[in-house]
Amino acid sequence: MRKIPVTRPYFDAEELDQIKASLDSGWVANGPRCAEFEKKIAEHEGIKEGVATTSCTTALHLAMTGEGMGAGMDVIVPAFTFVATENAIVETGATPVMADILEETFNIDAEKVKGIISDHYIEKDGRLVNRKNGNVLWGIVPVHEFGLCCDIYAINAIAEEYGLRIIEDAACALGAMIGEKHQGGFGNTSCVSFHPRKSITTGEGGMILTDNEALAVKLRELRSHGNSVSAADRDRGKGFLLPEFNDAGFNYRMTDIQGGMGIAQAKKLDFIIETKREKAQYYNKRISEKLPELIFPVEPEGYFHTYQSYVCMLDLGKLGIDSVEEGGEYRNRLLALLEKRGVATRQGTHAVHTLGYYKNKYGYKPEDFPHAYACDRLSITLPLYVQMTDEDQQYVIDQIRDVIDNM
Ligand SMILES: Cc1ncc(COP(=O)(O)O)c(C=O)c1O
Image 1: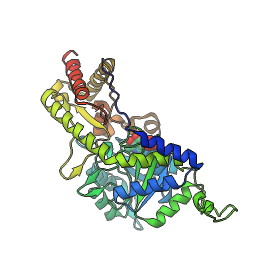
Image 2: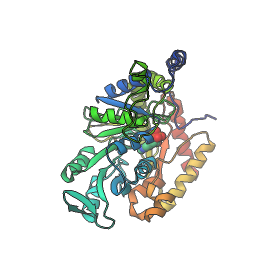
Image 3: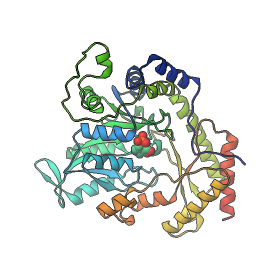
Image 4: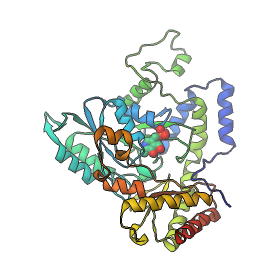
């Protein structure tokens, strides 16, 4: 029996060489390798500045804090995303206000965002104030889910109309584009992840991307306890005394061991994305030929999908199933049977409003965001990684066909 994981990072000797060079140099905490990695990623995405962090979650929290999000503020965010998006907002003291998504793209529905603003906020002194709790609407944190950019131009237009801010959660979307513009290039700060399930990895890790150089300076200080002089600068002779700390910051610094690994990974980024895109096309073709019960992920005209994850939906109509609940049970049985046949799969991601903390604290019900709920129950991530062969992909398709035929 084949054993096919849901993903597998892609390394060669260069990651080891970089890690060894970092150890040999004695510089293992944040330093020159991180700075080089930041430059490489920012250049790749066509952005001026990169600020490397310990994860995308800490990147989000750092960017949010640095851009003034905090207590007494509301932030609109999609209901279907990894919980870290909402958690980072909660960590700032602000309140996440969830919006439903479009099932075809898994991304936030701009029309729903407009509806939330018109239904729940009133304009006071040039700011949008929540009619119920008096919170000021800080802005929107859209997510580019699974490697496909959301309709960011529609979100930007809403933000412009109401004077709102935006931070893009691009955890999954390094390299994703609309037209010739990469994520991070749409006029807002964005945050990417280097977790092993992402296109490239540093074990754990993240990065903030911004064209605002003054903001990058502030974020680097906040990343390092509020320290106004970096360790690298002090090493270059900027003093033996501890410098000034003007903010109460964090320790969200990426290590140089990871930075070196990132430099090696960054060189492979285009190859990894192109290879995954080819394999995604192969799945699309096979699914349309053999698996009408699955809806494969779309790539809207003008968008460049990186297929960080290849996420399908169950087509309930084709399966003769009437309800999302029943569909969810069917999906779970299907995934369990595939696991027994050596094919690892996952649900796409979760509907955050159905998770304990958010359900209990904010009183959300599953039906509040029906598309997010349906995607939570009916989505299936198929294995996709560079080392996968055509035979592996064919095996995945054949096993799904056979399991469905025998359910
Ligand atoms: C949409 C989204 N946001 C944030 C994160 C958090 O990223 P990290 O694991 O690097 O903290 C993830 C990770 O899966 C994610 O998918």
